[in-house]
Image (cartoon, rainbow, N blue to C red; front, side, top):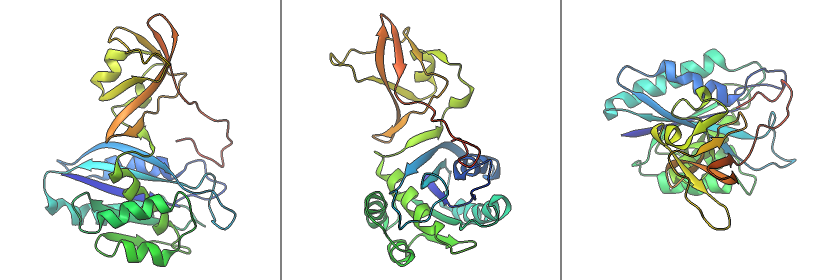
Length: 245
């Protein structure tokens, strides 16, 4: 079964790492037999009434676990992980749930609301009453983003992968077949909807970040020339206060 572990607000303005990196590090804390299949960054509402460190994003680890008996130990380890790696001045939150949990429909709706309106801790706690949601420092505001990260990721159509199939190990120029083998679907959004061939190559511009689309890792590309494609998006310029994800 798939288990979703949401993290939010674990850094501060002087950090050289963000919540995305903390989430990626959680792979080493998973019990034997449990596998991290990806980490998804979710973008939440930017609003003057919402305190956030850099871009108001949260992160969700997708883990494949062999049995529900692992859930409790993963919750314990997620809490330990946050306590170990979250920074002074942060307001960390942790949410852990499976797609089959009773309140998942409400959690998905909550995640969507966090992308367009200001919500409260009370809203988060009410929504996640049947899954694990806990705060671990400061104001505990991170429970909002952690719950939203899980809801949006379970929905399957939002966010971008910051870890999936070893995406950080690929070179800037890579073949479509290699990306397919790593579990990424390459989709052209050109006017004529051409289909990238396995032997075609993709210029990732050094920033390979497929989207979560239909519960799959989908890399959108546009044509550069015959048999050559370029992925959409790119790494934004930012200083150490906004750690790269």
